[in-house]
Image 1 (cartoon, rainbow, N blue to C red):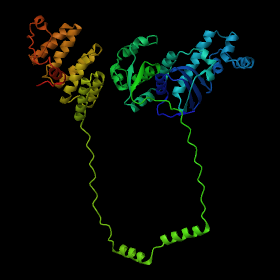
Image 2 (image 1 turned 120 degrees about the vertical axis):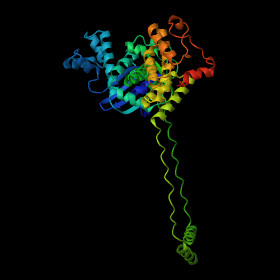
Image 3 (image 1 turned 45 degrees about the vertical axis):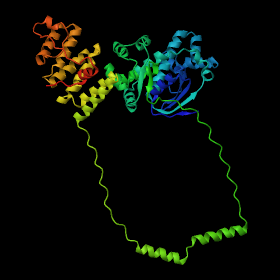
Image 4 (image 1 turned 120 degrees about the horizontal axis):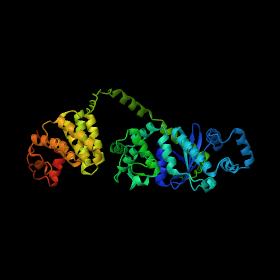
Length: 460
């Protein structure tokens, strides 16, 4: 029976089990008791617990369905029958009510398993028929159980720490993720967050930046979707279940000792004594050599290597901007935005941050849901470089798309006042006579022109 040894706690293992479509029994020895989770095809099928108060009879007492005397009488008259079956037979509950209460109890067991410390975790692979034949008749709703438990569990800090310890993890969402989970009680915020997931692999930090959720909420969403099968880990080390260890090789029998005959034994002892005793002449020469050897000459220690100075804040920000540009060239927009946001946190007030704010504003313009944040980035860029026309032109373009004519005209007027050659949408010069006709830039249609438009700094 192999023991699971891993540094991740239960939510990560639940995602791994679902992704591997595992079947078997997971035994959790915890500080308040032992819980057993039964899996088939990657879904939870049943849970058992010997912790105090987590048996069905005790649970029904707490819910007021039974009292202690009734429970004892029921168990005495049951002749080995299950508590749920006896409650239904006595007419205390309907089968539907019994299943609902049992589902509620199993949710409580999973919640406590997630919140209590796991002392030992053991995985027993194999079909469930032998250990759970009767309980398989109860249909456990894996999706609702996981969703409710993950939303209620007080494990925010543990989830954040877990994802921080695995920076290489990347997940890929199922196609039509929002439709696949539409039966769950999604809030508008979560529904909007699910609509932003695409087919590209995303890290937990990128999902946090993409959805705008707080760090703990983003970590909980990733863990929940992973356990539900909405996300699959495609990069990084998957928490795997250990395989059966092969039996150790049989120990070799000690070889019999060969006893020497008396004559040979005496010869061997004589030879050893002769080898270990140096002749007097040799001993004299060694003593003389020891007297002639001078003492060790002291040597200077090599200079201690100097520690590399930590780069300044502007330099760290510049490296993040270069990294973001690389992500853009690979069509990894979400990760580019994340790198730019980190660059701005490091250095977002100096004139050198103009490029980071401009690129961030351009990337946010690509998503209508980020319009407000795009305007904020472009406004910050214009404050850092008041002579630059490009931030005003891009803000005017955004207002133009949204139909805010007055705002768009004001931005275009300001941009053309700073640089008459800046490009504005065709037709706006005709609607506002104060705006001169735009002058087209040559070479923007080519690849190098596009790159200059995306990454180039504004002169001035």
